[in-house]
Image (cartoon, rainbow, N blue to C red):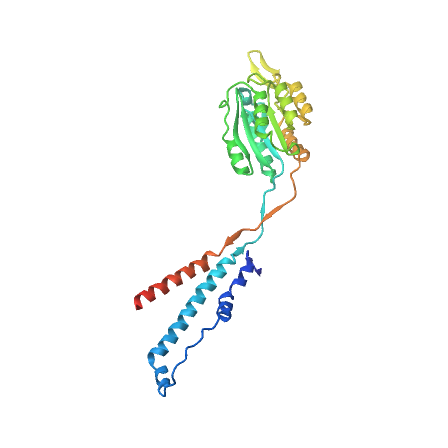
Length: 332
């Protein structure tokens, strides 16, 4: 290997260089032909000095040089030269984290604030999930959106930018008005069942209770436990809000339909944790806690790009051989 400032030059099969002197050995070891007896003539030197004889020797020398050059290029190509670039860090295949986000009709409730302004629950979820996704370097992330049914919006991928874009494009109502929590868990189980138990996590966020779907949350939780899928559940929504009525302002509980008991049971059954987010700050804290519970792998994998160079000597050898053949045809 020959080291340079921005990479290295090496041969994959350097032992092929042993083939280079074979033609010389063959020529030296070949048996010499016996010369037939001839008469000595006084004018032999004149015949040897004729221009044709000198031209023949020159032609043979050029032929040997050309043949040796082509053969050397072929041997060089057989040694498989390559350029090895500088080390490049690759994302580590750490945990596989599937994000399940509720898009049911209740997520349009404006009981949370973002930068001092009342916004929908989904808008808050998007603003908090963006930095969470960015922090998960080294993990494969996926996105499930659920309403009446559960849909795999983004399969598990290292491309955090694309996943964040798909989340940003999610709109309320595109999955229906009801909440299929069991279906969302079942879909995550289906997509992650073959992964190692310690490396797969589902973070499920909802603001209601299971009101749709073919699979109950209890059955889906048991399937998740059997396949080793750990589920962290998040219940989002304020505990109280003031609304205008005919009798003036009235305090209500906008999260009355949140099934906390079910979410706690799901988390406990699968070895996960349940979190309650009543504000934007609490939701940010929850995702920061999940970062600590499910830390990103710190080990690095290094890849050195390699570029094959054997095509250059091989191509030059073929080109030289072609020119040589053309010249011989023209001369003859």
